[in-house]
Image 1: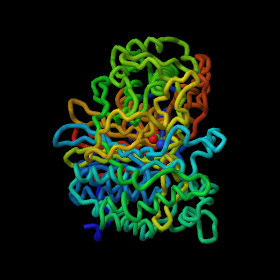
Image 2 (image 1 turned 120 degrees about the vertical axis):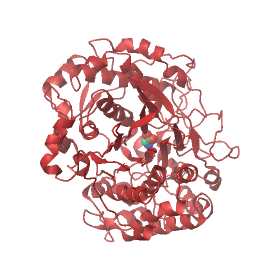
Image 3 (image 1 turned 90 degrees about the vertical axis):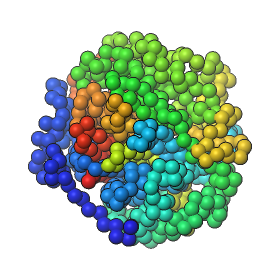
Image 4 (image 1 turned 180 degrees about the vertical axis):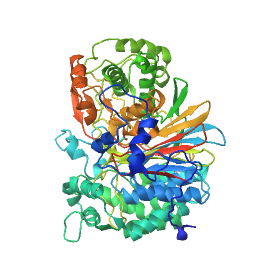
Length: 627
Ligand code: GLY
């Protein structure tokens, strides 16, 4: 079916709003869709989107409205390929796999088969929400001292990020195969077809793509295979307007299409991955063929909290996203947040300090729960939230480093750890189909361009996810750090049966927060974002805009964001520029920072009126389209 693949956009003429004629009607549409804001920052103003985004792209001009299916990704080609899958009769899970493989071609620096992914799924047939954990894991030989040099000194973070020593066992391909096998209707080979075609034909490099390469020239220059892929033949970085082709990657995917998963996790591609990691002369890693052969995705129960009549489902550990978002929502529900007008000092104050308190607990308690005891239930207990929310009921901001709480079931000895720096990268996409199956997927190779290593002759980048571990195993008092690189395995729950007993295998704590929101058992919203540890706060901002402020899905995404991670309060420019607001927040004790565009949310609203409304974030190159 893919040979005839020709993207078509067909708009439903009876849809209440449409992308056509948007330039003329957009301001009106957005103003109609969004509630009135009495303050000086109007988040529904398209000028706001233009200012905080890299560009005023199609993403900002939604929502796209359709009846049958909707896709929102950060790449036009990925959106169109996934949409075509839906139109050809595939379900949301098929389309999600297609989107992931195309994203590997069109946003190769953000996610792919060399990395890991978290999937939150709503299965319309069972009415259940599930998690698929395709997170990278530590190789068997990886341990707390693996980021130390020969003198025992910790390699600084900005050196840890490049090279073989930071490469975790990749999980994305196994997760997508699991998705298709258990929830999809097409074969892996079919799901790979659009990506193979686009990798072979190539596409025109956009300015954001070129800018990303320019920002990583130094790292990419270290490795000939990486330079060959992202530089022109004369050795200068690819520029906007150049054609990007990746025939090596097309061959790799074709081989996987023919031979299945084993082509990647065993055999020649696996050998090349291991060679690339172990023979990196700068910073060799520990990955082995056995590590690859033992990798299994894990299907998990989702995290869920009830927030003001909505059931918010998120990703469970090893992503801290679901629990930390749940903590924030519980705290806000237990506070006076709902009474405060949006985008003003009172509401930003409550929202920021809820984020601060939740991050204090995240840093102290959360790590891979297959290896460490995590008081997950206690953290999400409504009584615990009520107690903690008392700290919010004040006119003063919490101290810059807010105290952690002691939830029911908390371990006695635990380091009050800072968290590993998590730079901005990653990508999120969301798909809904005719039957209202929903896929909300956040996927990454960690930093932009991951470890910087392209597997020679294979055309894909390897992750640097091991940098998401805290580098120290113990704090100064000898208390264990939950997100340390090693720990004793407590459980081994795998989707595909038990893997052989090995050491290693711990998965670094993530902040990825793919989310699906249900009301009365039916999906209402699906969303998520890239952005390192800002992801959780970004998702909170947009969710509150949707649920509490009743904003249109595009306006909810466009609105400027306020992020706190138990440190300074980061305000996107339109909020930061509001001097009165900023000074009031400073007067309350916040350290306010000016933030450029934060995150890139791709969201879909599943309307109770039967319409789907899709929106992509103007902060990146996204596109939401339905049919
Ligand atoms: N590497 C980004 C995350 O997992 O949150």
